[in-house]
Image (cartoon, protein in one colour):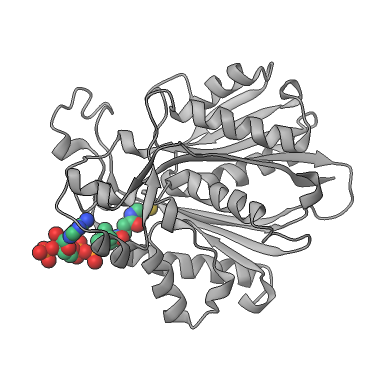
Length: 332
Ligand code: COA
């Protein structure tokens, strides 16, 4: 029995917002944003493009690639910090209904920017442990533009909207499958990153300067550089690997400068780190599946490649998944 990645899909809103367009809202420049973050533009969703809508589009694309009918999906997990409904139903419940995945289990995971890594680990473990489940959709989707303070230049310019999905399928194959290992961690911390608005502590918050996404940028930067390095080292040690054995490290796309700093600090080969933040911004739980989808489009993913997916974010949470790539381009 092996768990395989059999489908991959993504959805990006049509509207592109450049760094220059931010000047309508805050005192900034393209030069400042690019030099501090590596971002040039991001996608911003319109009213119809909710998190559920983008999840459905990316999930349908993953099912189409795998040629699996929605009725055969047994499990749907959506990782998101920006659900359509803050309480319930879960965004995954909306995806289940829209796809017609009759009777499938569906729930959301809230682990912010680590969400996709948490969801992939959970879905793979559930498929392995279940006697009946065969196909699981794992989706990372965010409409971060809806929770920003658009007048806070130190946070708003970082984020973008989008969704990415993978289909995991259980096969009778006797190989080890595509999900080879994972590590997940957390350390509760409200001060570093939070979004109080609408939660039961601030149910009717009107002052978004206090309750929109709040971030201690410098602290998160230091944490991110340190923890991404530790994740790569932890996965290497657990699997008797070195960076030279790996084909790709796909980090959560929070800030390109953060990834540069990590590579410089460790003297690691930069060509093994995939970075696509330039035209997407930080899309939180969507960033890793969107990177996978873009790499697939660019023919960068080949059979047998060893890949680490490593993420960190609010919570604080962090985690990594070691995968072997086996999805063939001719399936496209
Ligand atoms: N445009 C122009 N100037 C800006 C600006 C913007 N968009 N945002 C901040 N500044 C200014 C600040 O006001 C400050 O000015 P001052 O020196 O006059 O006070 C100056 O630039 C430096 O600000 P600072 O916050 O120290 O910048 P920084 O180099 O730390 O970069 C971040 C800020 C947010 C880019 C950086 O801290 C970061 O990326 N942190 C991690 C964020 C992250 O990844 N979050 C998500 C995790 S999942």
